[in-house]
Length: 197
Image 1 (cartoon, rainbow, N blue to C red):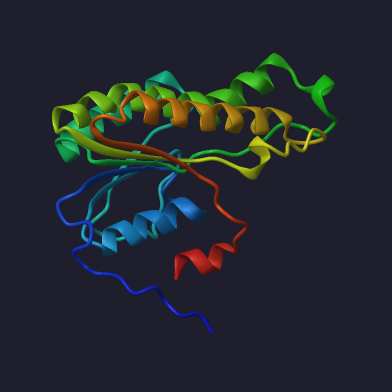
Image 2: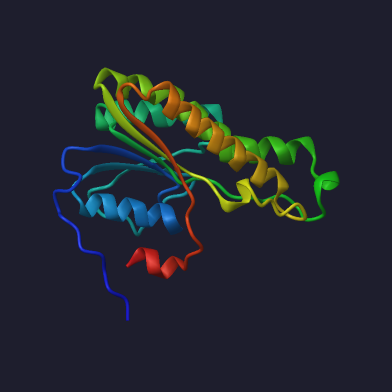
């Protein structure tokens, strides 16, 4: 039997939040939880979802491209009028099995764009809005593979997540004297059904 977490409907009231990859799995669960807590949420993904709360705003864009990132930054400014929290849920691996020698430049670039550079580009465009308010929180979802790479199938992904972890730590150090937090977290293995209830 699944017991739902207790929460306050005003826990995130007044907060403007961007969630990347918010239409499936962990990202969708994050969107639903923030919306239930009173946040104004803008979700983004490459494909639409019919299973988001009505209050959630949405922009269809590919964060793995500079053009998609610019589209999202514009949507944040126009639809939210600022930003308090960024939750980077986008990521994954589509590289072929076979180890390091089968990975092409295109495999590496796609994986780095998806798992690292999407966050770097979005943060670069949105941190100035946070600094105007003298506060902000950025959450980067990394992976256990950042320290334990599975070289046979996901070496590029593991490398990108290791870089994302260091990037997140660097942001935290750079902005530590302000009311700002950059946090990297490791999602534990989960069943999607557990997250969406």
